[in-house]
Length: 267
Ligand code: GLN
Image (tube, rainbow, N blue to C red; front, side, top):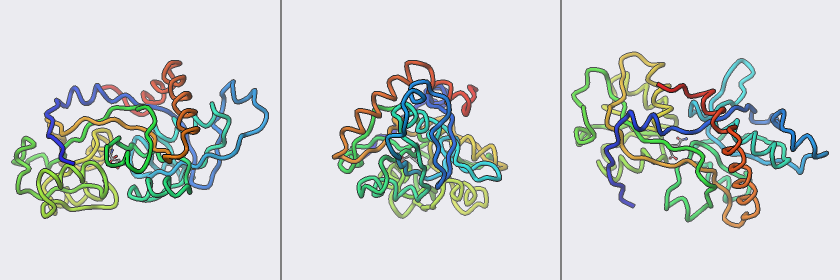
């Protein structure tokens, strides 16, 4: 699948980041997120919903605090969905590459990992309605001679393995120019050590990583615009409709917006 490079201004990209939410659960910790009137009415939990994620992707999912809780927009939206549907949420932290296999094998009920909807992934899983828009951006050293996407030609590009950034970089610039890392932050560290020339990654984690690392910047021209959604097994259409119904309510009542604005400040 060939992707077209889309020149999107970064300003637009930032404005289009609509996601959000609050919630926190650790791997083995069960959390039926707090106060939701509807679920308080229901007596017992319908059971546990297992969410597969890769908690290395701030502000969507990451470890925080001494208790090592998984927090972030996805964690909180998932908690709100589970709460609304009367389930207890359990979060499983695994490699990003393993999230879809975990869902297709039935070990997890859904995957939520800042995951972009792609035609390729749709062959393995169903996606819920989208709950956020994102863009792929390019991180370079502050003094880099790379000023646009075209300048990436022939450069060594770092990506998180199995992500859409990996896919675009490989398709557009060739496998030999792509360095794959297990975590986005590892690619960013390699960049700051001068081992690679650029990193292609989603805009919100990019902002967090650049803020935490000296001497890097995000290019103004962004790469491709994408939609994030929740991955569910192809045969579990019942959960898909439940999740879509819950998402629609959480969008309508402002819960999603408030979760997003807790983690992403307009700038
Ligand atoms: N949005 C990207 C993808 O779906 C990256 C997700 C991630 O690294 N968690 O491939």
